Image 1 (cartoon, rainbow, N blue to C red):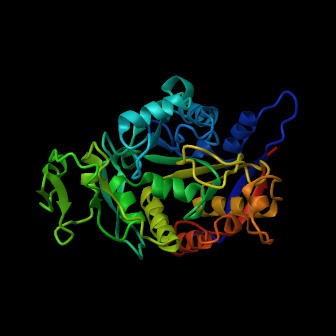
Image 2 (cartoon, rainbow, N blue to C red):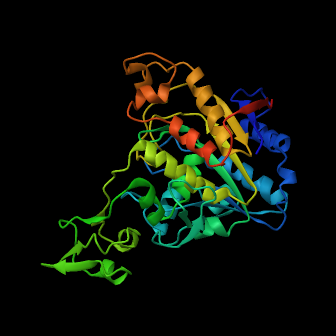
Image 3 (cartoon, rainbow, N blue to C red):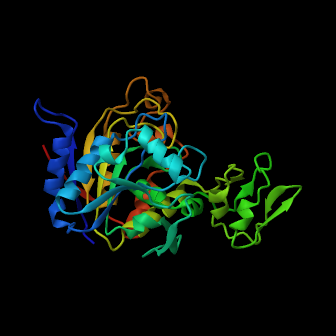
Length: 370
């Protein structure tokens, strides 16, 4: 593996007659997308459509610019994401697609089809061996994402309350995991039943391969000794009655997430784009977004997901805190904005482990594209 990766960068500044999307196209040219062998290849564009109510997610224009370039090179692009583990507007494919449409994503707007990678209820996944995995040996990845020949990640770079920040690694790793995969990353235990929500319908037991679910007084109960922790019951419950203890530390989550990202990209051409604007303190999974914590910086892109995230975190930490943001209001100085905003998180573990397992390198050469 190379000791230093190229990271391509363009600022948010645009002269009259130019545009940010034109500058993104010039990054594609400089990075050599035409040399990736895209003709007749299925190209997954892994993206986060944003939870409705959040206004910091990436605009569809970025996705269309990438999809158009892939199609122009003979590729077969599609936008994709997997369902969420938490209860929200993206828990199953139907509501996920509706949420995407509400936020402006449609085949017409994106220039390609949209596929929810892990199926209707988040249970359509592939168990993928993780090359060099230390914490985990296999990952449960959305099937459509694994069926692609080439992987692109298009990422809104922002803060995150558990992982410190969210960029290419998080979009690929956490975002690429199926419902069961997300459970593996977030949780070291087993799912539990909220009896107040349980309708006693029996659907969860029908889909439990371990016969771990029984009923008492018309309420489901999970036998932890029999439960394999696969998360299928969560995906099949229409009443959101089966819940997860979010008991994994941020450091453990970062390590698992990096290994899941490795499972997604290993053995396939891949390219990653981080848009560093509207840098919100928390994830786009929230149905709201707080004020940006630093000024808009620009677009970073690389064939190396670790290097592009490393370049972005350095750029963010070199920027001033925006007045009136949580970053400005939190006590304590120092250059580490995300650590000040989320003092219990440590984003370094994400990059350290990603480099250790061979996902990429932290050292980079910045190539400015005007």
